[in-house]
Length: 411
Image (cartoon, rainbow, N blue to C red; front, top):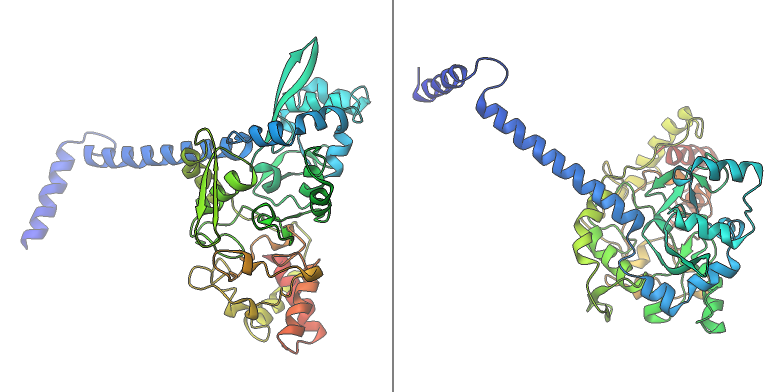
């Protein structure tokens, strides 16, 4: 018997001698370490969820002091209006009495005071309000927004726009431009730009470069294992984009600097962003892409469509691997993509970014977030396939295109 076998035998005997029942001390220590690590990870994800849903990073300074949105909400935004512009209500935050009042009509959905009550309950997804009693009346004194306003929706289990939260899902109903345009602090010309965006779109660079080219609000799920998480792959981690949005778009307190685009923004007086980024990223990485609804695609056609995807459609050459993207290894020049030129004569979105290129979009959960391409120029998956077929001269038959659509709906 060799010395390594003897050593292994001696170690086994030693562990057995120290154990009367259950695992040995060494194994128990390992199990304990693994359990501690797992608990720490779960705690970090839980913290990240709270940040994602409720942390404004101090952006009330912008939404209240600059845009005066608290006054707008108090006077002009009733629940019906809020739902019309795509804001969502978390039904799980509603007490039974409020649920009953909405159902029997005793609580008005056309009274801004009801919106204030919902904000007091923390029930408006992505909007955080401070409600105080002023002169005997509940008054919205501060208001801000969170990540969830764009990257969460609800399951409509109570009513359209009211239900349980679906974190990470792109809120394709949201009209952020119409909401911002309600501010009395903006010029009419600026309001016109915001109003031009429409539902499900937002330009995250307009307030930096003054150019107007709204982009589709992307989902925040299915990002684990993908290094380039934005349409142009500007940063290698979610935290890069989280910092950009928190500081430059939400108005949170902190600093974002990007020499490649010349963006250098500091919102004083403190940094409320940096410490939150690790847990926020961990929560987003925990969000998996949703499976397609039962009966939403033809399984037999999808099987045929996979063959088209991997063959005649040439889709798999870029939408590769388990994540359906080659973004970890390459980015693509604008001349390679079929989503340009931009609609309405807008400048190339890539030209306004740090990389000046595009990443290949991952496809899991594709069914959930129309319209498609970075600029929303394809309203349906059928339009996506048709655009590729024409601009890449694929020569697909009608049957092949139909099957490919079913495959994409199945992802």
